[in-house]
Every structure is written in structure tokens, then in C-alpha cells.
Amino acid sequence: MFAKQRTIARPISLPGIGLHTGNPCTLVFKPASPDFGIRFVRTDLPGAPSVMADIDHVVDIARGTTLQQGEARVHTVEHVLAALAGLQIDNIIVELDNNEPPVGDGSAKPFVEKILEAGIENQEVDKMYLEIDSPMSYSEPDRGVDLVVTPSDDLRITFLIDYKNPALGTQYTTLQDLEKEFVEEFAPARTFCFLSEVEELKSHGLIKGGSLDNAVVIYDSNGGQVEVDRIRRALNVKGEAFVGKTGIINDVALRFYNEPVRHKTLDLLGDLALIGAPFKGHVLAARSGHKANVALARRMRELYKKKKMARRYPSSNKNAFYDIQGILKIMPHRYPFLLIDRVLDLEPDKYVIAIKNVTINEPFFQGHFPGHPIMPGVLILEAMAQAGGVLLLNAVEKPETKVVYFMSIDNAKFRRPVLPGDQVRFELKMQAFRRNTCKMTGEAFVEDALVANADFMAMVMDR
View 1 (cartoon, rainbow, N blue to C red):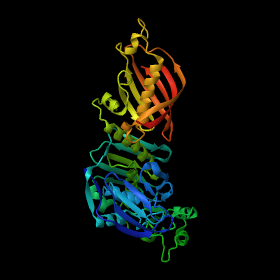
View 2: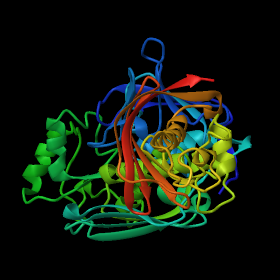
View 3: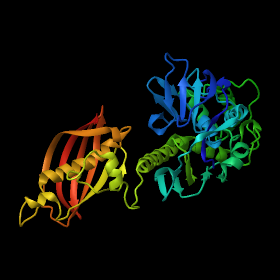
View 4: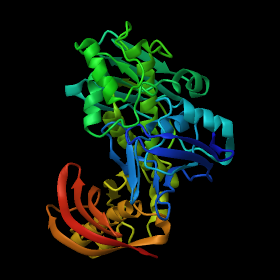
């Protein structure tokens, strides 16, 4: 896998019609600067609004992946994204003069060919890979869907489908090496659907651009030729349409003996591009579709954001998300008022876990109380609030330039005293974050005993 970020060498265009909308559209790939990412631009709308290709902007996964940001909405992006992910393109502008990319032949091949024709350039900035350290998974037991990602030195995908249809049956494939296999072995795999699905899709206003030229249609009913005649009318097929001996309408020749599962792999690769970063891991998929793919991508995106934050201020302690040096870079507090020593875990926009080691050397013990040292409750709340400040500052750009002002503390309760020698663990959850204002709930524990809890409201300001 490549170490440097990549873009294309020059602009290049591809005209066609959208699969579901049937709208004519010209797609233009354009080079982009390092760290730009993948962004779709609607040039047909006022102001040419754009949408970033990441999981945060997925709004529909019914029969494809749809992205939207403001007025910019783009349907069925997975084949474009699969082409970009397969060619390991990090930064690119994808301009569209309508709301759905051209379907082409139903595969990623037309996009791949155009990108290769334009040329690929390495950029002078390193890629940041999401490296899977431990297995993660997503499943839908009622549908028999399973997705597992395990550690690997490279991106690998193993996919299994098992339809109760003679033309498909059980199919299996493995993508081992993007550079060697993607262009010839996976990009040409076309989308497929069952005959029984066609009229249903049509009745929902979909596949307006669908035809036997851009999809493999598999026979799965008992209606015989009469059923196919209905489908011909549904798809506006001018020529012949017949039930093939292979179980495929018109006996359309497959490009690979297991083309359907290869296309499923292509869809998965495109959906996982929504992580917003390349990854190193082995994905094992069984019977997965867009819904499950996007759910897994969402979990991987959260892990990526978490790892990206941790890399800002690397910890010398493998058991710490941030050690004290990282905390000092984020927080403005200093002795004697910095009251957290380590951040154990942090999930962006969700929660933080931090600790405070309480020793007899704390300056407040001199007066609170001589001969009976107890950590002041107000300082327990302050330490809890500082842990919340770390969580909040990691939700904004350039946290080292910001400061957190706490606006209110509600429902504060103290359950038991905190004494010298205790290690206090603070666990805070973000409840809402709008316009730089945040609501959090926090709890403080010594071992497994709850010692205090409170609700906080805070605001992020410039230092």
C-alpha cells in the first residue's frame, strides 16, 4: 500500500445517465490538494455546493449510498468511491451537473479507466492509515449478516454470499492485494438484481436508468417467458428478452464465474471509503449489503477519529489515551490547579475517562482538614469538569487555542469522602453539543464506588 497521499494528474470527464434517477449527468474528476479528501460538487446548483464523502453525510442506503450536506445531495456514490478506494486516491474533486453519477455498465470499470487515463500523482504528504489493532464486528442475526474486521498489514476483503437460487448459489471471493487485483479482477464486476425485484424497484420510482446493459438480471420466479415480457416492458427493452439457460435473463455472459460476489466486494470497498481514511485490516463479510456496510464504516470512522486525536499528543504510556504531557498541551491549567493526571479513554463527541491520583502532598490537605484530610467536594467537581474540558476541546479544531468556560453545575451529589491514597476515576458523557455549547453528565469513582456525580453546561471560547 502506498505511503504518500495520491490525487489525479489532470481533470477528466465521463458522461452518462444515473441508475435510479435516469438523469443525464456528466462527471468530472479534478485534482485536489493534500488532506482535501473526496468531495462531490453539484455544479448544477446555485453556488456549486459540495458534500464530503464520509459517513457523517450518509442520508439514505435503501438501494445504494446517498450523501447530502446542505443543498448538495448525490445518489448512488458507491461505485465512484470503490474506484477511488481501489486506486488508492485520497484527494479528489468529483463534479456533477446532476444528482447521480453515470451508471456506465453497472461496475466501477468506467471510472477506473478514466482515472487511469488522467494519471495518478503521489503527493508530498503521508497517508494516515486506520490500523485495526483488535477485532471489531457488526452483525444482523435475523438476516444472517456478519461483518468482522481483524488486524492485517494490508487491506484485505473476504466475502461470502449464499442465495437460494441455482444461478447464484454459494459464492466466495477474496481480495488480497489492491495494486495487483483491483483493476482487472474486481472493478469490472457489474451490479446484479433478481427478476422479482425489478418491478418493485420501478414502482418505487427507482432504476429509471436501469437496463440489461448495466445490470445482470437473474431469473427467480415461476412465471416463465410471460414474466420476462413484463420485465421487458418495465425496463423499456426494445429487443429480445428471454429466460436464459444459465438462469440469467438473455443468457448474458458473466465476466467472472463469481461476478456477483465480486460486485458485493466492490460495493463494500466503496462503502468503507466513507471512513474518510484508508485502512489496514482484513474484512470478513457474509451476506452483507449497504446497510451493514455503512454501519461497520460508522464504527470504523469513530475508531479513526479516536486514533487521530490520540496521535495529536502521543502518550508515552501504552495504557493512556493522553499522558500528563498531552494534557498539558490541551489544557490551560497549571499547578496547583491541574487536577487530572491521565486520560484513559476518549471517544470523540461521546465520552471521556480520566483519573486523578490523590496524595497527601496535595496543597489543599494542609487546611482541609488538619489531622483529617479530605479532598474538598468543590475540587472533585473541578477535576470532573477538567476531564469534561478535555472531551469538549477534542470536539473542536485547534484545541490548544481554545478554553472551556463552565456555565452551570446542576444536581451535584457527594456520596463518600475522597482520601489521600485514593485514585479517582472520572467518567463523563456528552449529552448535547451545539454552537460551541455543551451539556455533559459526570460521575466520579474510587475503585467501583461512586463518590460524586453532577451535570455540567460549558462553552468553548478562544483563549
